Image 1 (cartoon, rainbow, N blue to C red):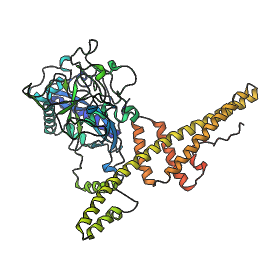
Image 2 (tube, one colour):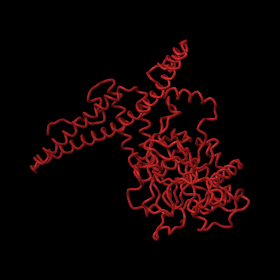
Image 3 (tube, one colour):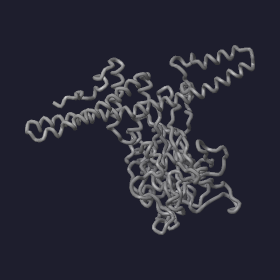
Image 4 (cartoon, helix red, strand yellow):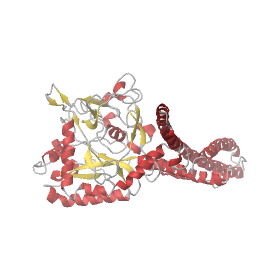
Length: 531
């Protein structure tokens, strides 16, 4: 699926391409052939310069959050599921649970939050260019340098990002200047977090949640189409050149197999509902060319020690590599933005409509300050803390419920539209058949059946509109924006149109609670008559 980029992001990519073309003479020996950094020829990548004339291809991973200008916007994030329904087999490693994700980069045009992740695993050539360059560069790139770098430790991967950042920041006209134009001021290269890696590996926002939560990201073909694994007809236990298999829905290559990928996080086991509290070694994801195909899924994760007595130092494995991510700090450097974060935090705990300083919990705080009995004051504050957590949970659940109703309402609007159109076509065909006496009786039962279906779905749509009209208009606008953002990432323009029709239905319903207002998007409302 093609990833949609805003004009601002596209301009940044174009500007960066000019930089790369002009920088070759001053920062590198010779610009690499695209086969050594973007072998699949994906046009929708942002190319990060590295020493020695090389590049690293990056993909944009959009996270679905509320508009940053909304009350909760600055602290909005996306609830996702990671892991799998593992049961007893590796359940303590891979059991599914909820996590939350949000990109730290911001597209000024679309207001989308996102992060960047490597479209391919870091190759041996790229690794050498960063770790040895720019003073010592490979004499020439070759196929043997275009395999993922392996036999590296977690510290080696971290050191790669550190050295690349130093090089980028030492060149004033480098990539980071371009990133600042798309909301990544003071951005930096790092390893992806485990949640970022799995969200992107599953297809990110390019696929709906139901698809994203499947064990593997593909529904067509076999694992052979997407991964190098341990088999005589596959990798034969060796690393293979990057980008030779099919990509995942987001356009990432080799997330399954080839090199197992080191991520930023320390390892934690899983319980049935959350991560375990013990902090262990580091995490590698995705399986490798040494794994059998049945062990490679989106949930595949393994723990390795940072140091190992057998190897006598930093733990390395010949099947272990990494890909990079680009992001920036979560908290804005502009201190004028801090009050918005504080207000957003208070909004997450809102209990009733009205000013924030007049909420029940704030009044409870004032009462606690006036209580002289220390024991009673402590109990009041404990109760206040419990209520804060509960209100935050309730508000998040409320927002999700509104989004679900908006999505379902959009589907209902589409079904109403299609059913009304079918009735209209059946009636036209019936009239023609009646005129020509060519079995008009064929259409009567079909018109009746379709009208019954239309009545059922239009009544359900009316009830959905009635329910959503009870929510404040700003809440509907905010959550509808989230729904449409998710649909936009999947290029589902038809559904966006019907969600917008639902918004209009809600607005019209508030002024006139009748069927014509609710079904404003129909040319005519069907009737049960056959003529």
